[in-house]
Amino acid sequence: MATQAKHLTEPNIVRVLTQSNYLFRGLDEAWLSSYLRLDDISQVKLYASRPIYTAFQKGETLDVLYAIMAGGPVVIRSTPLDRVIGISYPGSCFGMQSLPFSYGLICKAFPSLVEAYKTTDVIKIPVETVQALYEDSEVFRQRYDLLFELQQKFQYHLLNGSTYPPQAVAALLRALVYQERELGNQPETNATYIFDLPIDVIARASQLNHRTVEQVIKGMRQVKLLAPVKASDPSSDTIKVIDAERLKETYSATRDKVSWWPLRDK
Image (tube, rainbow, N blue to C red; front, side, top):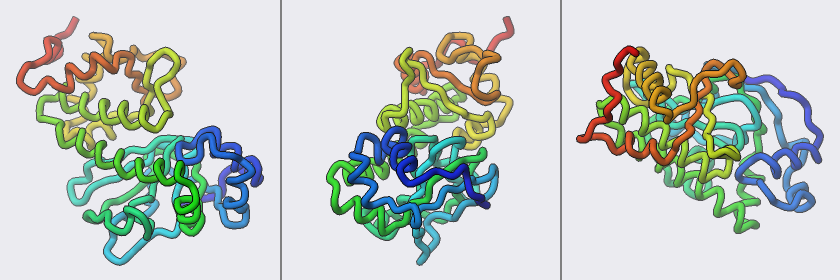
């Protein structure tokens, strides 16, 4: 399920975390180094489509927090419908709901599979370290608590997804835009949100078939909600939201339908 990722020294781990991870961004490196010991931290590569753990198993908890450094996304799948109910990208963390402190003690749900949809590099931080940081740093504590809030708001967006295909896909995109903006990971300088978001993940989150999702994405590109495909895109699954504000109109289109659907060949 996991192998050692590219080795980082203790100072490098702290620097990478303070520069690129939401929980640790901007924290004093010297202060953080007193908590993050290299002997206690694992750098691992999680391979695609392999289970990492099952969240919310009765009586079972995790002993580490996962900080995503590269790759992904990491997804949470519901049982038995196999619906995607959580998506995490580099700069975020996962595993909080299964740590035995803070909201992890009261966060209950049905068993849900957590897996790396694509190969993902993570740093595993012991629960004792996370809890110590939570108790000693108000900034860390506020950020850690927000991760729980964002998970609830992500699922709220999905619950607002209707059977109308453009609105269902827009609900997922709005969920990701909100999440990544709150985490401070996006947008880019040109107000563009860039996601590695395979059609299969969109389909499983919106409960649409793959062909319908492909048509909706094509339509959103035609009306310039999304950027067209380019050879320079990071991957073939790249989705670029270039008009997040206008996307709200599609997200709200439950009774008033959008003019470009159903898609017509041009």
